[in-house]
Length: 151
Image (cartoon, rainbow, N blue to C red):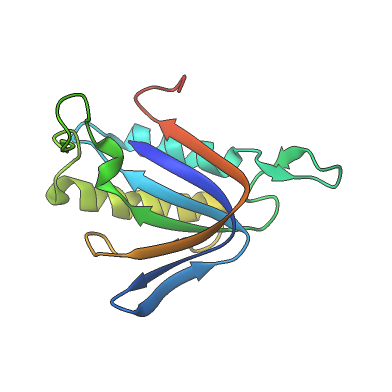
């Protein structure tokens, strides 16, 4: 599982010109799933996201988590996070899980993240063409890969 986490002052997802979800201060999480992802990958990634100390404390030091600031989370599925670009100019998505595997992972990821956050996590719509807008606060962008925990 691979996620790109962006600290945002606001973010939203629009589908077919209709606002689907929006958040204020918190995180935009782009999430991509692989065939080999397990419940352990989902749990580890959720805990890591919730515990990341990337929000400023009263001294201006990144020392607080999204939960500690009572922030919001918006999750958007993004299979292109598993693009392979080694050969040619057209990315290969062979490492991305197909919908029959990715959708249950996505649903479980959102549920687990909500449980750890203590409130509902907002989402885009799996497989839809989405317009994602955000104001990256910092900017702060973190990449986490459950298969490469040193990344």
